[in-house]
Amino acid sequence: MAVDILIGLQWGDEGKGKIVDVLAPTYDIVARFQGGPNAGHTLEFGGTKHVLHQIPSGIFHPHIINIIGNGVVLDPIIFKAEMKKLADRNIDASQNLYISKKQLLFCHLISL
Image 1 (cartoon, helix red, strand yellow):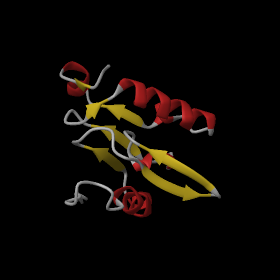
Image 2 (spheres, helix red, strand yellow; image 1 turned 120 degrees about the horizontal axis):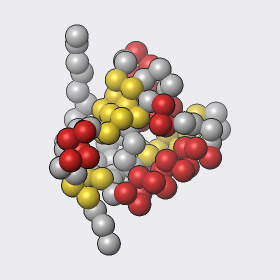
Image 3 (cartoon, helix red, strand yellow; image 1 turned 90 degrees about the horizontal axis):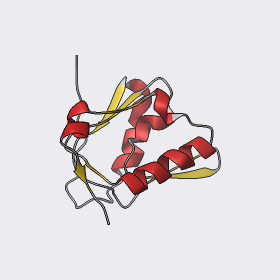
């Protein structure tokens, strides 16, 4: 199985989310493997802007498995709000979003 990795080298805001969204339809899996909540991957399609901070950009494609790996710092408040925004737009992220079991056991959390 071939794997492609997209890594940003300029402290974020290079357009990684947009690139992943363009490339995603040709892949089976999109994963975040490190980092924390980002400034926001802004994607626009169908005249609607979508901003993702923690959930992988492949979430808008129902056939793609999206993974949050154990190296990602998870902010439960941002994550919950992001899931709600997706649900409000009739996107059921629970169908194709997975969080690493290691993430659940050894999770780095941001809290108040």
